[in-house]
Image (cartoon, rainbow, N blue to C red; front, side, top):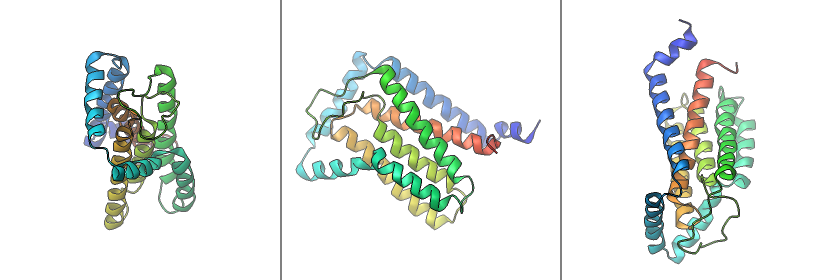
Length: 214
């Protein structure tokens, strides 16, 4: 058995494959049951809770932090980091690029394939986006950006890696919660966005580990 194929029999390879299959199964199930009563009821319950805690301070915070999931912010950051860090960290451009662009392409394909309308239970705090709702692009994009960076930094100095991980985890959670708090996404949109990014991070991991692109 070649060294590449042998990778699939390691604990890491088996575990990542299982995580990928679970994530894919959940996304497929969600995409097939978006209009079922129990999904709508679950989404409404969660959005109702976010609506109940609204206040001016949280409105300002989430309206601001939600931009961290936008391509207007992430694309320049991606380009800057790729130029500055790629020469110093092996496979940085490959890992972040596959995770980020794979996620963006998949999310927008699913959006226009499924065409789920935006939440209508409560009025949005800000302007309601015009594109379809499922999955949440902001959640997927910030998650893909963060996971790609964390994967690329696995072999770096511990303190630097831990600080970066803490900041990125906070950003992912803040953006994910902001999409529901602002009433522009269903909770199931947010979950699907996170899982799509997770799947592409695993694909990037496999590609690098197997040396598929050199």
